Image (tube, rainbow, N blue to C red; front, top):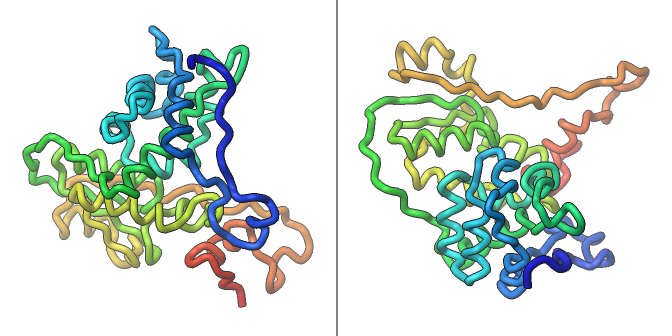
Length: 272
């Protein structure tokens, strides 16, 4: 049925989720996903695509879901997005693609983000989330990506698909940046982040962790001694803003950034 009410997201009951750190939302079932996809009006002028920062062909992937062609839907998404399971969870769709959905003018927009998450999760569960891209001749050009957050992961994946020899350098012990160290487990499970990163490895991206650019290597060394021809630097915007009030420098007082970094590595508190 076109239009109609938006399908709610299944989630853990409140009296269950308040006792664990597992993901709150459970994701659509195939039946719910197909029903939600069938709400799409397939507009002649797809405003949703203009609201998508990476211009995913949203109508086409949703149409594939409506016909239960889930593998095809994933292929459509991955033409433009390297991280669908992540973006389907934490991308602010309400201010982007869903904000301009025609159905949202008088009702509720199509749940584009939830459908993207469903497609990625369904493929991962079935072991079909590795999408084969057309072979591109290797350029023989080394490119360094400094940082392991969303910007760098996206850049590395796109460059690898274009035939560049990409190496990503991450200062911490796991790549992911804010996805690993800034978003709580109940919002974005870390195994999903690492699984998505492994898809980039399957594209040929080399990932080096525990490497601090500026100390382990300088940018000059990367260019003049390690053979890299270009460097993308995406060190993030993770510095906290302090209130400059008495006591904020005392022991056991943490900024939100440091608190999340200590808590997130394995879901347990790492605070002495």
